[in-house]
Image (spheres, helix red, strand yellow):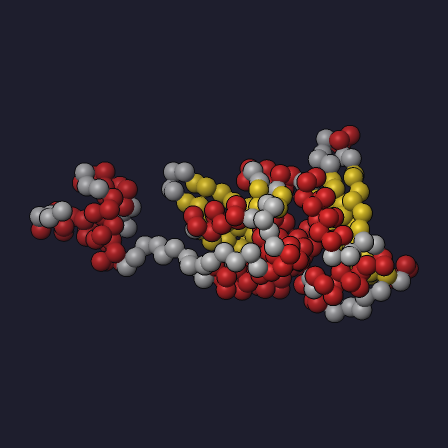
Length: 254
């Protein structure tokens, strides 16, 4: 589309003034693609989609386990923004740094790590491609992810091991119980299907476990499903899964 010099000058002036593409399009009665053409010439490409490939790998399993445990998504319809987040407590800064490196390496895109009110950290990025990525391996309702998330059937054995690592490093617990001379390992979730999936994966790896149900209906809270690793399998679990929590703690396993 050939535009007059006057119209092109108006477009450039508005872009340089920070006026949004949508607003310029409506004001000058021009298509967004036309405005974006001049936007790229002045400010460079507005957004570059990340490049990554599906491989059903252990690395992808860990990334999906982290997202299943502490991730969230938000779609802003008005702005057309697809936001992906992972949330961390204040004590987990070094794990947040580790996850940032992990995500940026795989997705080939920068993630922001912000310190937020309430002494928490949030890892975040905006990308429709990454937003949709997790549905390749996980099934969930993004509005109530924690109690609906579960693995899809086609995940490989390597993916499942990575998934367990991501899950236990987010919503799992690994602690030394001195009185019992043992390391206690368990995972808790409000997704019943996920809890029993984890139990079956662990059993397939010859890691003995049991799923317990904690009914909190009297308190008006969701039921918790706790996957507990048997004492006899703690060594095998750590050697097979290699959770960040165990490596970071550097404690001996009993």
